[in-house]
Amino acid sequence: MTKTILATGGAGYIGSHVTLELLTSGYEVVVFDNLSNSSAKSIERVSRITNGAPHFIEGDVRDASALDHLFETFSIDAVIHLAGLKAVGESVAHPERYYDVNVAGSTTLFNAMFRHNVKHAVFSSSATVYGEPETMPLTESSPTGPLNPYGATKLMVEQILQDITGASPGWRSMILRYFNPVGAHVSGEIGEDPLGFPNNLFPFIAQVATGHRDLLQIFGDDYNTADGTAIRDYIHVMDLARGHVKAIDYLLANESKENSTPIVNLGTGVGSSVKEVLIAWEQACGFPIKSEITARRAGDVQISYADAQKAKELLGWETLYDLPRMCKDHWRWQKGNPEGYR
Ligand code: NAD
Ligand code: UD1
Image (cartoon, rainbow, N blue to C red; front, side, top):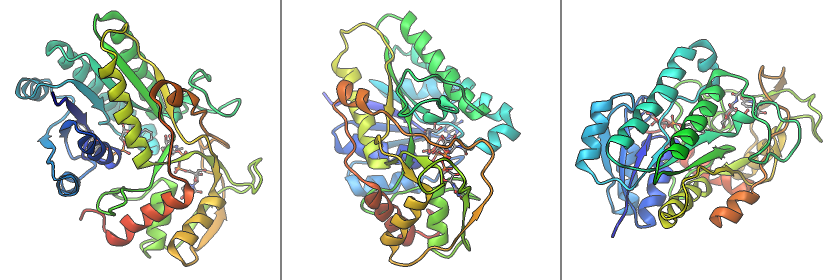
């Protein structure tokens, strides 16, 4: 029988790709999103690509009665909880919003799952929980120490989900720690559509490439790396999406196993510097992208990349796409949709 997955935040950047990948893998999907940082057009486009419309319900994860209504309407087998706020700077300025949406929103959702006997959750966490790393690559047992309220909310919800799952018969959950998701579906129909000023490297370069921004500021070239710029583990959003399908497959296939909440890194295991990313982008676009070196950005770590071994062993998941492909796919989306979904 077809299994039905609830994707909170399923209209967002990662959620829309996860929804698409779930549908093409034979799952039914219910998207629940308040559209605070996304557009319903992403869902329309996912429907068009897959010929299999996901159900869409507009609502807020902090709204217990909306969640009750959803769980009464659909028979949900598992939840992927992507909904949340994700801007680091905003979390420093307005931590109350982050604790409300990310933490209170998660507990409201988990309590609704309790009321409706839904016992499987996959949670979108982040490599940001590792803080300033001591050694590389980062394994799931590397020390945590988030540097800002956003990271703190992710670590709190990890703990909450682990505690709930451990204490509740029949519950089995998974925590996915994403590294740096970039790129877009090969169709160029869905992709990242930041509202306002883009904080992250890929969306910023993309807007320089379309002429919406003058130049890329490279935040520091005095790091202790080969070319002096900071290193990150960029992961194609479709590889990431496939990781979620594997996580759901795993939880639903192992129903009889003891309740547990594995933590799994989703990264490539390969680090790329800002300058390497810029070169790959120039090759993808076929023209130079203007840049200048500026001071380091406060709160940035020097190097971050994953040990992706656990995902391979537990889920049989490995990434397929390299940096040139990430840039090519991201550029196809941006070129075809220079104003995003607007
Ligand atoms: P996104 O903003 O595109 O998606 C989040 C979605 O959640 C949006 O569609 C938004 O409208 C929705 N949402 C926000 N508050 C809500 C609420 N109260 N109720 C219902 N829906 C709500 O961001 P994304 O990049 O797709 O991130 C998805 C998840 O992955 C987030 O939890 C984020 O913290 C996490 N994550 C993202 C990254 C990244 O670099 N993009 C890295 C690590 C972890
Ligand atoms: C940022 C967040 C992190 C979050 C991650 C999600 C901060 C401090 N950290 O991390 O919590 O989990 O996004 O993907 O915001 N860069 C430039 N110029 C730019 C933008 C970025 O040089 O205009 C550099 C950054 O200094 C960094 C690299 O590019 O070295 C990647 O930046 P970004 O995409 O923002 O990701 P993270 O820094 O990893």
